[in-house]
Length: 150
Image (cartoon, rainbow, N blue to C red; front, side, top):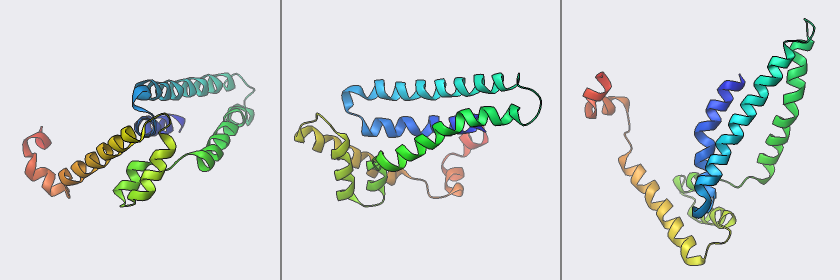
């Protein structure tokens, strides 16, 4: 179960981190997110391995669960309380003013000009993606028949 969670997070967390981090430290913050996921997975595996040496019975699974569960609860509480909304997701839903407010919250140290430029680029990228969106599976087969067959 914990491996599936790590795979799910490794696809979404870097995108979110890069959209809320300043341009000059995007790579570093995204990389640290990946390192955090890797360290968490490694720690969970070591805890599970240590649990295999516990006496046979409920302790083998309860002890590792008890050691890992508080961190998940803390993470959930902090994310629900302090994490800003995704500006990209708000733009995709048509909430431009709310997206701008959330983007301003996360853009420390940027001048107003840089902030507007970055927000405009984000908006333009979302519009580009929306125009290139393929609406159905049949359309995918029609457009990319050879790729799909390969």
